[in-house]
Image 1: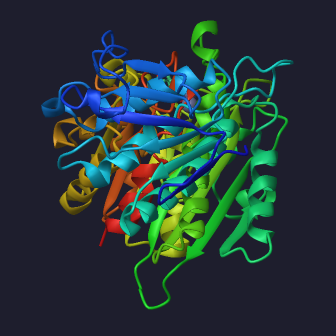
Image 2 (image 1 turned 180 degrees about the vertical axis):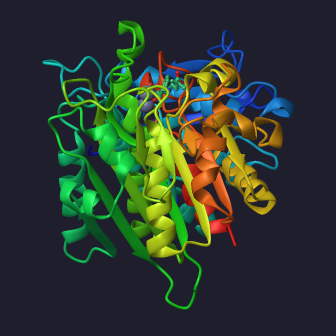
Amino acid sequence: MSFILESGKKKRDSKAVAVIFVDEKNKNEAGISKKELSFFKSKAGEIFYHPGNGKKPIILCGLGDPSKINREVVRNAAASVTEYCNSRGITSISVELSQVEGQYQEELALNVAQGLLLPNYAFTKYKSENEKTLLEKVFIETESKQVKAALEKFNVLLRNIYLCRDLINSNADEVNPEAFAEMSRKLGSKRGSTLKVSILNKKAIVKNKMGLIEAVSRSSHIEPRVVVIEYRGNSQDKKVFGLVGKGVTYDSGGLNLKPGDSMLTMKCDMSGAATTFATMKSLAELEVKRNVVAVIPLSENMLGGNSYKPGDVYVSHSGKTVEIGNTDAEGRLLLADAISYLKKKYKPDFIVDLATLTGACVVTFGETVAAYLTNSQEMSETFEQSANTAGEKVWRLPLFSDYDDRMKSEIADLSNISSEKNAGTITAAVFLRHFVGETPWLHLDIAGTAYFSKKRGYLPQFATGFGVMTLVEFIESLG
Ligand code: BES
Ligand code: ZN
Ligand code: ZN
């Protein structure tokens, strides 16, 4: 990916098309005659192209009623500029924001950049021909150092969001546990890397008694891995932040095989792992002054002669025994062992786990809102703020004690499925809580948000990269 987001004082670049954002009140101030503009109403997302009469061409993009301008309006309007450019071969633009007034000046530049660049992505690995061009150069005019810094930060996040999407969109056969681990090892051994990467292979997983990860992985001819990425960005600070991301590189359901339609998108079941990886890489590149350890359990969930079996009981890393009610509830098993390993070895002050964990989450919230559950009011408040700053939508679900009994088993300490059908997102979290103990913890279910069935506004179809921006913001803000 060769695009560049640059910002600074007005620059003359003869090849760049000028993009001017205007609201309904000042649409005539872009230097174009009233007559020529008579059809342009400056509605939010409306585009007007002017060839420039010998000067550089101009794209006007409407923002609509100035009293209704907010982040979503700006991002969606900017995304329509990208769509316009991508379908017409325009690859270099220079953005002027001076026409828009009001309290948004600072945020405006960032939201415009986000709206322009989050959709500026195409997954072309498996296409013989590219169908559209992408923006390669986006210059945003600003005089403000603060705005420039915010844009530079976003540029780092964006590249890692694209990477996260590429990992999720790629074939499950390509991004399998072995390949994911190898990619992580390379990241750690890059010259000057501030990330320490260690990898537990099958032998180490067995030796460390991660019986649930082992159970899930037995069905696959590819061995499981646990990737540990450590980032120590602040030696003065004693606090350690723990991250765990579900890395089921393909979820067939196991012996409780999924129906064909539900299986179709299950290469996305490592989205938690990909998001965690992209987040760690971002933290290092941004030199965030925090200490973070990520534990990423990686396995396929397949079926075969050696599959783990419904009705059997397995011993977790924590020592608690788990009866398998359904082999398709495999994510929580990987997370449980990863969480208890993280706790034992790294004693984190906070734990966040993220996973495409339950179909119930998609039933509840659809694809645009992620569910979160937490045992910590402090984490909840900071998390909401961070998600809001990032512009990603999250909503809290309760962990009332009403649900506690549902994960009990007659034969083992716990069952991996609930005794009742409903409230699936909550009961999955209730299961995880047994492995978290008293540590402040937040669980994020990204089953809907990680992977879109269709393009939505400024986010593309398929992998979205949801969570990277929120998590980086959260880690910077918490504690
Ligand atoms: N990976 C799925 C959850 C999922 C569903 C992710 C749709 C993304 C989109 C998970 O492993 C799963 O199959 N969960 C089961 C749990 C059930 C058997 C208790 C589910 O949600 O149906
Ligand atoms: Zn499953
Ligand atoms: Zn799964």
